[in-house]
Image (cartoon, rainbow, N blue to C red):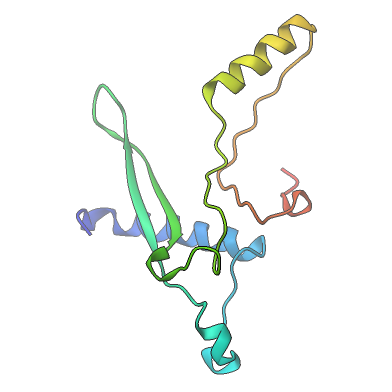
Length: 128
């Protein structure tokens, strides 16, 4: 790790990421002994991707982001996955929604997600 003094913050962030994965059923622990030989072929490693977000003008650290990512170098297309995509809307979608809301005199609300999982259901969202 390049910044050892940030280790406690990275550890806290990693814990939040793993808690979210377990809570939403997107990730679970397995015992290798309980899996068949066929299932063992489809076990892929994972690692944490660390990112430091800094203020653009001052360079001061704003936040530490960490995500658990699958190491896909052992995957076979068509067997382990069919498509790869990142469901991130473009900024034009946001502008279009705002212009439609303004034209129809509707009220808009902003929602900020700290974690978003493709496999999670809406029922799993906390009641904050």
